[in-house]
Image (cartoon, rainbow, N blue to C red):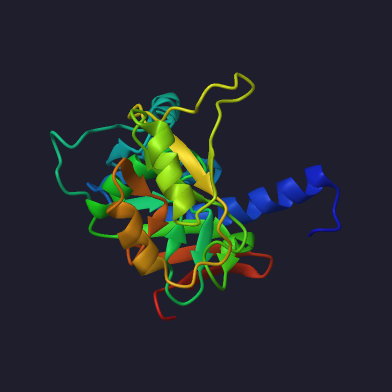
Length: 240
């Protein structure tokens, strides 16, 4: 795939994402409340879900971002919220990295990690979809680790992250140069730390750090993943 021209490579990758998304959406049953993920792979799942809704499937979705909510409205997917449903039946979302064996994840390059984690935690079953390029032996091999932080005291929090050896870079919004803002009004520091030896310990360290809201480490949350490969879609479970 790497030898293909970039446009062809992206089209091939999108086919793998779409296949994984469609496999996950096949799990959705009539009457379910479904968490709707954010990002390019999750958008394929939303498109597949919309096709099933158009055929008569009755569901309600809880979006993980304003962008996903707008897409759901455009596709005609009914939505609900936590005021109506405190518990979800299923959540489907993408990932920036999936660790082989554990199915621990890095998420958040799309800027919605906190809302995504809230929806995943509220779901009876959290299913992850990705193409094969997202599979890694250790988290942090390819993707930075996003850390969502409070804007107040930003410089102090970035300093704490740097002192911990996490090499944070404040994410900027497009070409404006201004800090990227999440839907919750927070900012994100992308930490370039390389392969993570102990994601559980790092997650605990970050959660205890003053000024940090949450990190893109999703530890022990995925019930299964659907990985799009050139040979077809692979279903993986933790330890499998």
